[in-house]
Length: 91
Image (tube, rainbow, N blue to C red):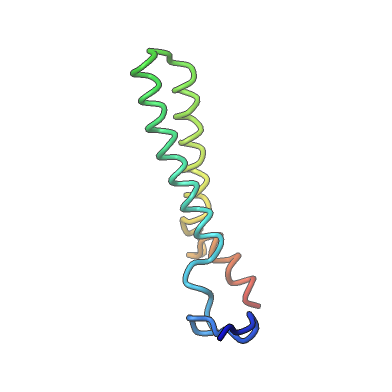
């Protein structure tokens, strides 16, 4: 009825990476956090009229988005740093 973990076959071809690599999940969570920070900054600014904390939240969201862009946009060689890490993991 139950199979051992070593007997369970993955649902993706073994010569390729899983459909969602850990780095893809982490970058997605960072983008969702950036969107939440922007939304929270707008709500905090409108409710309290405070400027400093919402501005810092927007700054943090911008830093997070730029960080994701650094990892995902291709460099001069045409390959993104995230792809270089995935390629290095295969070899």
